[in-house]
Length: 444
Image 1 (cartoon, rainbow, N blue to C red):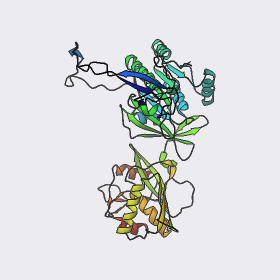
Image 2 (cartoon, rainbow, N blue to C red):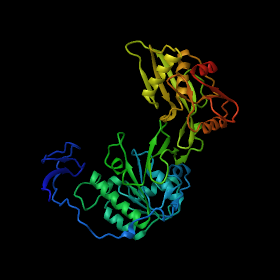
Image 3 (spheres, helix red, strand yellow):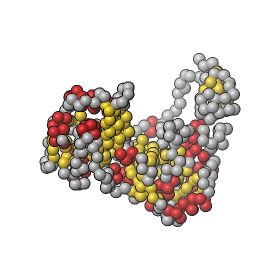
Image 4 (tube, helix red, strand yellow):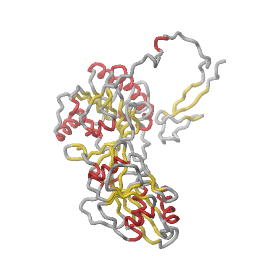
């Protein structure tokens, strides 16, 4: 039985649906974007059609083949993608405006030496040429197309068949099939679907750039993550010169890797030893400062945790954390009060992770507790001391994953006192502790 036809009204800009026509969309606030649509007129019964059984794949007879990759020779970028750009993949590179996305893709084009088509709806050829000259890059393999129409862009890509296509940016493209303006959700989706079809059919790698605001709600990247093969985000740290490249989705590799770059006058430079980046340089030691090691993917990072403990003057004590989970900080404070009898119930506690990194693991628990105690007692912990381990509710110190790599990184950077949980290892010079009480005795 055929379903009765119903009329709905939807916004061509944000896609919101309404039961009746209104002048202004309550979802995005745009005027005059509500259009009428008819739905429910199709017969819901499944009609049999002819199928080709040869299209079915039997995994018993299929062979696993490695994906062909384009190595950009930018080690930080290749690491995040799992070894380079997979041929025929569609990659979304997001980030706030002016953070360095266009600079990064131009450096990729320079290193690949493969025919590349750069499509821009924001800048002219002279502006791109000016940036290339400033970065001192080779553009002999680069062709530029200043166009916003996705149908024309698709025709150029099919005709040229380049090895790599750069779309800067996806919010400026539009399709003639939709009446909405460029940058709307529907326009961004249909343009991305057309680019995805070209990438898979003609085996062409495509990188599309998308702008993201602070809340990430701009039409584009957040609505495209399910369409593309990989989603990369370029972020800034607390120090404006450094950029972090993170992977939110990767069909061909891990999503836990991170790349670090330094923004210079000649482009993005790779940070060879990131641990030295987040460690204090030429500073006088202060109470409440402790060094620890966290893992970002397969890479260990040494960083500094800072705590400031002051007496509460009015009301309830404050617990503030930057770069660390506030709920976990509350738990660690409760452990210190209960298991070690540190009187913190009338103390304000502020915790900071230097360098702009966010700690999403438990390996820094012991360092956070030590930093709080150091600030409370106003006693300095030696600069050549590093603390590793997870703190349980009973005050016990537990091992963390890949602790061997963390210890190796600490020893490579000449840390003499490595306080860690009890583990089975052949490494020498470690100070192993079972609980917080033992750790406090070793430190103070």
